[in-house]
Image 1 (cartoon, one colour):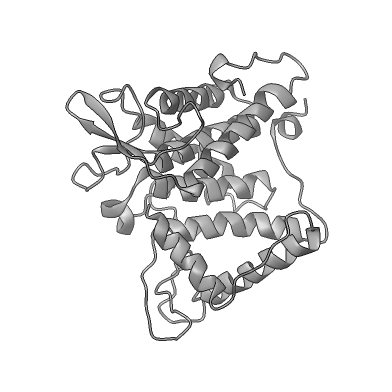
Image 2 (cartoon, helix red, strand yellow; image 1 turned 45 degrees about the horizontal axis):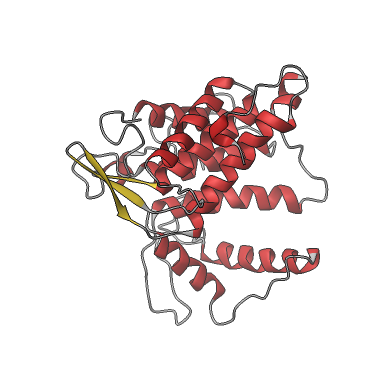
Length: 105
Length: 189
């Protein structure tokens, strides 16, 4: 795992402007996470012919000419956090499971 | 996510085999675990289920736990020919700890909790997690010696340990309805 590449990916996702975040303000958190989520979705090349599910292919920078590689694990990181994001942003939250709810204890 | 599981249903697809680190594989295993925890509908029954994917990744990694050097731990890289096979890093070991802790919390199975304790205890023993709870990058295996290779501190790896600790704490302390197991000494806050 190369962490600087993930930071680079986030930097690409955030492009020109930083995202301000007030962790004590729910709306601010929601706004920040949805902006990052939109950028990540925009980077996911699902409309390209070379698309492979779960892979980001080549990441294009804001100037449109770069094609930075990404690391395969970054796709996993995005999938994991995307699932959590979707479950939190649904109108009706999905039930969170842990062993109490599974075994009925 | 299913497209990346590989023939062994373990997020070790053939096209990643040469480059795969334990941390890379764990990231995908944790993604599947998130889907299970959050109650996402499972794939069709002829496909692997979310929790099974996470368990399989855990089993593959537990089998690679290496007592032969540094008294345990996971090596960074899986293929022995890769640069980085000689290090044991906090990304691989922190994510393995987190996977064990979250599986313990999700399944209630004490075997996972035991592995979580073992993984955290090992990180403390080799000082990847320091007395001040700094999380360093890696130790290097060289013959019988085991020395700190990099003191770089990543937010990501500290986060991996924090998330694992929170889940294991929940397993031991916040869910003591029937017979609460005692909090192990090495996990005292």
